[in-house]
Image (tube, rainbow, N blue to C red; front, side):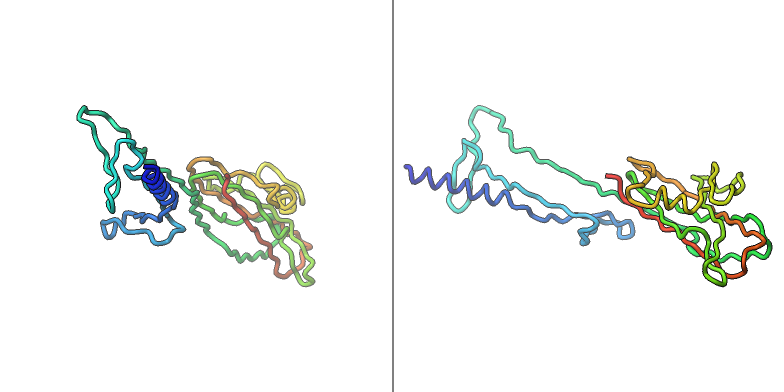
Length: 236
């Protein structure tokens, strides 16, 4: 009798060990072109696993049939037996869609003055918060010796493509719209100085960025350039 009990316990332990293992389960996505469910083969996009296989051996009122398994013995008097709960858990990744219009500008100025040019645009859609920081090349620099500098600013609007209504400030200064390039590097130029772009739920906005620069009458002729790097990270 003890041998039978021990064998039964061993069988239950084996079932339990098997149940702990995870199994990859196919996951499908709806294909509107084929009008059918198509299996997702790239696990970067979607994946699923199942675990904890269970048989009726876990019920006290069960009978073991050799080479088959356990069968529930339901009593003559109707009685409810609760089977194990089946759970679904879904983890949704943060996604982001970004579209940038204008990556390279070629400008030509013949006469000294304050100038700006039509904005670059960054259209963003995402289902969570986004951190960002910025790095610039500073003022437009270059010229015949490579050491020339043209005062340069950046300004931005959100969901507003109209021309800025504020002129450029004094060299090296900021105003209500224009931010000096050196100021951007000093205040928003590292991960420790990141800013939060909306969130934490779904949002969609278009950012319009404006470049302003001042060419004075003493500026040496030649070619000048600068840049803007944007770094983004999900907001956990």
